Each structure stands twice: as structure tokens, then as C-alpha cells.
Length: 566
View: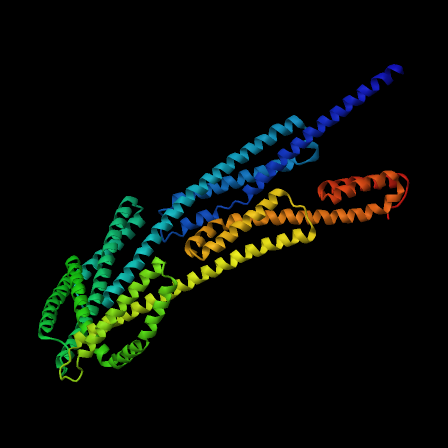
């Protein structure tokens, strides 16, 4: 009995170990079974009809693909048989009793899993193989459809815009060649001749792209030539109208130059039309650029004449009124300029602007005198000379306006700088004055370093204020450099003074609280007497520290005596 009791724990331990080992094997078998079932479920959903159908639907070529479809169907049947066999095995392995046959179950479930993995790999290989074949044939027809659509658009474009106006034989030959290429490519696709198909597709691509580029350039040149021709005809009509005017708006020498330009442009336009008709697009483009440049010169010449006439005829009265207004305000303008010059007599930038203003005023006066000599009562008016004088005067007036605006803006900015200088200087002086009053009113003993900073800053501000009356610009630049330093010094002084005031206020509040316990203990009374002396000496940091320590002791003693603080 005693031996049994001794061996009982060891027996229980062995039984528990055996039970734990069985649980581990059962768990491992369940995981293998679950993994195999998951792989089986994935394979069970496979259906090869979606792979076989595209081959059957490839146009009417079922005989050509009969062998491929037969192989795919055989694989489908074999695949289904293996899946059904795997299902039967899984049904057997899923029985609860078989899970405990560890060696047998482990060997067979691993073998089944390996077979399913092999089946999955083979399935993926077939899918990739058939997918690539389907994509290849589909892309072949998609590519052919794309080129056929491009050909239809090109054919429609040529028929609508080019074939009736230009060389129709060239485009008819090109379109026939493209049509024959389409037939060759279709034959290659049906015969599965990939190399010839690619060669014909490249040839089709090159011919189509070159034809599209040629047709597009010819059409764009045609539009450009039509625009240039129309623009040229309008300019010729304007020249004829100028010739028919009673007054002298254009002299014979200029008229001869214009007619020479007209003849040259006419010849070049004809050359462009011939080159365009013969599809010699490079020469056409070169000549068209020359024509465009010549018409641009012609347009500028005609426009300048036309502009001079319109400006003089339509705006001469307004222009003279503008001149009269300028003459009336000229004295006021000179007075204003002299006043600004007097205020900023040492400023070089202001002086340069005033010199520029005076030069503009002299030029305007000179042009006004020339305009007064030009008689408008003559039968023949020299519009070009009038236009030149009016343009020059307008430019001088505009320049005068801009220079005057710049001068006024410069003066305003300098006045703003001066106001800012005075305001900032007064603000610093006033703040230091307030700090001194606060120190005096509160009877504060400020550190010598702080007093030195205050006195030094005040002296420096007084010197800047005095120097500004003699040399404002130099003083302003000096003050701009020192303003950051003065701001830092002012901030430090304010912090020192305010900290002293706050410390004294905190000391007063602490004394009010501590005095309530003065009679409680002689030690408290003596401590308060000593702290009062420190306070009267304005040693506020040590006073506050002592008061805090004293109040801490009072609080501790009160808790020990079970008393409440008032």
C-alpha cells in the first residue's frame, strides 16, 4: 500500500504526459486536415469552360483549334476525377476515429495534400498558357480594328478637305495600298502566320502614320495660305483707299515701296500654292514663312500709315486739350517739384528722379512748339509728321506721369520712414520713462546692472534724437541697426523690474498669512522679525524663501497638533 502511494504521483504524471502528447498529435492532424480542405475547396471552384469557350468562339476556325480544345477538355475530365477522388479521401480522413490513427493519418493526409498541390500547379500552368493565347489573338484583332478606325477617319478627312482641291491620284494610290494591307493582315491572322502578320502591321503603321502627317501638314498649310491670302487682299484694299484720299497721307516714295512689296508677296503666294499642290511641303513651308514675314512687314507699314491718319483726324482736338491742361498745370508741377527737392535736397535718389522729370518737361515744351508751327489749315496735311510729334509728346507725357508717380511714392515712403523713426524713438523713451517712474513710485532697489542699462539706453536715445536734427538719414540708418538691441535691453529691464514688484507683492501676501501665527510661538515671532528686516532691506528673494520655509513649518506643526489652518 505504501509503495502504491509513493508511485501514484509518478503514474499520474505519466498519464498526464501521455494525454498531453495525444492532444498535440490530434491538434496537428486537425490543422493538416483543415489546410487540405481549404486547398480542395479552392480547386473545386475551378471551371475550365471559361478558358475553352474563347477558343471555340474565335471566328469560324473550330477545326483549326479542335486539337487544342480536345486537350483542354481531357484535362477538365482528369481534373474533375482527381477532385472527386480527393473528396472521398477527405470524407474518410474527417471521421473522428481516424484522427487518432496518428501514423496512418499523417502519412495519408500529407500525400493527399501533395497531390492537391501538384494539381493546383498544373491548373495554374494551363490557365496561364491559355490566357496568353487568348490575349494574343484578341490583341491581334483589337490592333487591326484600331488601324481600321484610323484608316476610316483618314479616308473621310482626305475626301472632305483635300482630294477635290489637290493631287487626288496620290491619295487614291495610298488608300488602295492600305486596303490591300488590311486584307493581307487578315489572311495572316487566319493562317496563324505571326511573322508575316507583324511585318504587315509594321508596314501598315508606317504608311498610315506618314499619310496622316502629310495630310495634316497639307491641310494646315492650306488653311494658313488661305488666311495669308485674305489678309494680303485686305491690306491691298487699304493701300488703294489711301491713294484715293484727297489729302497727302502717303508720299510717292513710300507708295513705291508698298507696291514693290505687293508684287513680291503675290509671286511668293503663287509659288506656295504650286508647292502645296505638288506635295512639296518642305519648300511650301519655307516659302510660306517668307511670305508671312513679308506680309508682317507690309502690315506694319500700312498700319503705321493708317494709325497716323486715324490718330490725327480723330484725336487732334483731344490731344490739344490735353496739351492745354498740361500748360495750365505746368507752374504748379514745377512748384511741387521744387518743394520736394528742398525737403529731400540731400537724397540722391530723389535728386535723380527730379532731373528726369525736368528733362521730360523740356522735351514736352519743345514738341508743343513744333506742333504750334504745324498748320492744320493747309490743303495737304503731313499726317506722318503730325503723328510723329503727337506720339513723341504722348510718350513724354506718359513718362512724365510715371516719373512723377515714382517721385511722389518715394517721398511718401520717406515720410513714412521718418514717422516710423520718430514714433519708435518716442516709444522707447516713453517706456524707459515709465520704468523710472515705477521704480521711483514703488521705491524699488533695482540692481546696479539694470540701472546701468536704463541710463545707457536713455543716453543713447537722447543722442539719436539730437543727432537726427543734423543728419536724419545717417541717424535713421544707425537707429535701424540698433533697434533690435534696444528692444532686447528694454525687455530685460522690464523683466527685472516686474519681477521685483511681483516678489514684493508675494512677500506681502505671505506676511499677512504668517502674522496670524506670530503669537503661537516665540520661534515664529523671531523668524518674522528677521524676515521683516530682510524685507525692509528689499531682499525680496531671500525674504520670500524664508517665508515659504516658515509657513511650511507652521503647516507641519499644525498637522501634528491636529489643528486646522485659518
